[in-house]
Picture (cartoon, rainbow, N blue to C red):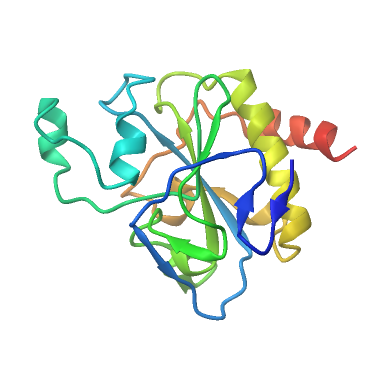
Amino acid sequence: MSIDTTTGLLTTAKYLSSPHCNTRDNTPIDMIVIHGISLPPREFGTGAIEALFCGKLDHAAHPYFRTIEGLQVSAHLLISRQGLITQFVPFHQRAWHAGQSTFQGKSNCNDFSIGIELEGTDDIAYEPVQYQRLAEVVTALLQAYPAITRERIVGHSDIAPGRKTDPGPLFDWAYLDCVLATCSA
């Protein structure tokens, strides 16, 4: 697994282009934000996340979708419960994943971060294959963007406390570190 720095794409990911992004200024990429998402909430494999990120969600298809109508959001990557990786925004572009956010005194985390969504919820454990794929992606990102350090791999809840809770209390940071150590060896 590697990153084509010319295109900003992960070589092994399926690519679906999202309109919910824009160009970055010259701010270096130095952080990864891990998120959790399911659409509708607590339902997996519906295709609704992909539709939302691509601006194609049918808001009449489920009552919950009406509550997020007009939302323009994306992430660089989505890792499904089965470990499949979909990329929506090239890494050199600014995905709209963090919203109002601050980290170490810097606001607007979208400006300098890469957003990775895991299909899941705060109250259901993530799958081992998701941690494996996440570790592989992080390893590739660390090689392509050396300003990212382990201390700058954070959850959405770390940059938007009180507003966001994902990836949730069941996200196993120690397990991710262990899998990362295996991937990096």
